[in-house]
Image (tube, rainbow, N blue to C red; front, side):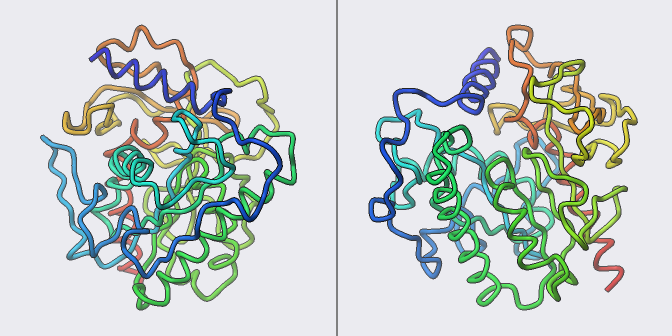
Length: 344
């Protein structure tokens, strides 16, 4: 459908540059930031096993089922930047968590299309948090940048601590994140898992959409196969033969190929892609969308193939980091959990 093209193009635009109309105004003021979430209230969870939410859904015409009621593990999902300045009023440094319209935008995008990937492997917990405005990545105001991301991380940390105290009960944990979510997942894993007792409960982490160096953690290593546990996977998706202007060929960023789960430059053909979810979730998983190959710390894919895709001019497929490999990631999370439980 042509709306696939519109969706990809518009979201790529918002992720690659700020809307100049709705940027944060003035210096960062702690007193003017939104009220903090209270994680004892289910309202402040975009996904939670005790409420009905979009992380419970599975694509139609697919063999997948929501297995959260029987799941033996938990998934802590940190969603990407949705606060992009594309709506009137999105001009603060941090997003509100009491804005029903904004929360609906979160729920109908990333929770539906990304968090739902993991409902086959575990109960999905996704906290609402006062995420930093996308402009925080680009601003020259370093004090505002530090404070905006600091406030967002503090929410994520508080949510995770609440989850540990009230819901975990020693269950295996999968960490999953995208974009700004990965900006916070990295420090969270360092603080709670890396070299800590909780590492024994880590099935794997899918920290996607932001570069993660191979040596970012001391104990947690990059996954090198589809069955390995206690490790992390990471990738950023671009069109084949394209390198972003800021690309450093000598980087040591991890690039996991989500079709063969290797971290080398081996090629995985389209036939290995078990299904992608595009704009319309209810259309199900589409086969034959893209291949994958690691290259100098980024993931290269052919231009995604769907009706109208020839009109897509963007070469940064950031918005599709998870969706292009929806079925493969879903099945891999289940596989890693099985291997983790066998070891127990």
